[in-house]
Length: 246
Image (tube, rainbow, N blue to C red):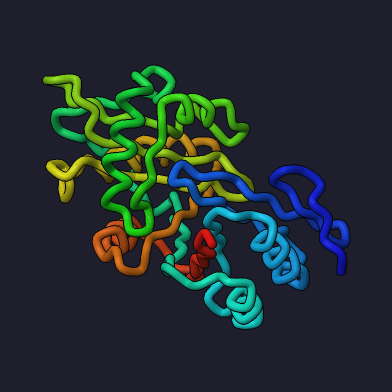
């Protein structure tokens, strides 16, 4: 089948489109077309040929046929992620308190300080090394259709005003996605992270949203334990594949 590059970052084949989105770590995130797995290998090979920089994409661990095709196109598996469902009816009915902190919406925060906090947290997340976002990129995400001001919060230390943690949920359909929940090292294994999660989960539950989804690196056992503790249900394991720059 013929693949056509219809835009700088879009490829088309038999009515299906593949897009490449540049991430802050300099890698191109490949968005495969849903519902057309028969075209994934063809489209991925075309993108690998046309794009000189590093590329990453995700596949279900069980999709061995596509994995073979990606290997032939120069992609290699680099990390594995456990995906989760988090039923919101399992969370407490009351707000969990975070001693010494209060929460503000990201739109009311200093974008430079939020970007620094985000970069600091990401350096301890497997697979996120080299990820450096800027304040301008942060502000750009706030215009995304999936941004919801009630679901992107910053934890501020009340005594000093320091930013110590954040939670970011994208209001996707059919289920909102927990994109990041993180706190600075001195506040790990405290109530700060659970309090941030509950602060966004409660308004979602009030809207009638039954669950949120998220993912954790299979090597990050602390994240696994936290998701399990709040009632997370494991679903599938997905593999991140990367094609390094030639």
